[in-house]
Length: 187
Image (tube, rainbow, N blue to C red; front, side, top):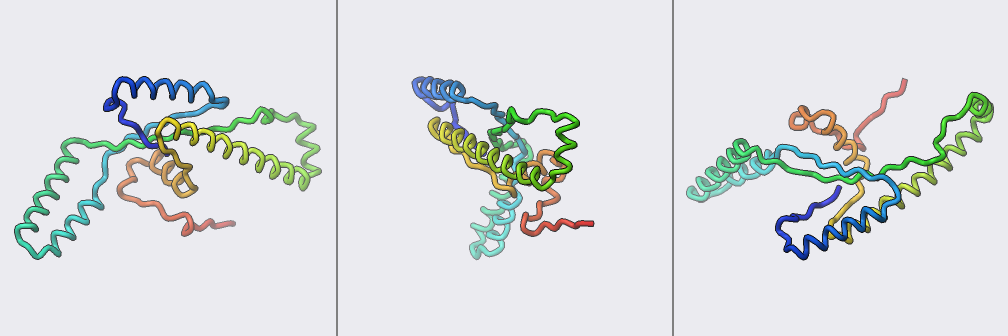
């Protein structure tokens, strides 16, 4: 996930410096990147719930009325204004040149040497993982040079992101189970 910069609020010199730094960032890339912007309607249910709880425990009648008015105002503002939140993501991909289609005989030979092939696959996987982490670290460092904060998403965050992307209608009604509570049934 990547933070954003309010470009319009920058001075003309700062805007030019940012553009120049971004061009430099793009020119140093040796691999493909995707920039994804995800817009969602702002969900303030938790905030409204906390306000309702604060309203219940407030001993002062005037403050309780103020909290109630504020809660209603915020709720209507979000409903009427269709206030959106934006999340920015930079996807660092990995497409090794060695991923070529194999012929019939090489696949046939691998079927007889399965253990060696699995080990080779594990070694290849570890090398590619190392390369991908290196690319990610390089990208994060270059983005920090632009004044943008970027963090790698962990497994739970990736699952939630894909769940929300592919099931937007369920986003508010069904919450994701934490990764450590998921169970895989084997048959």
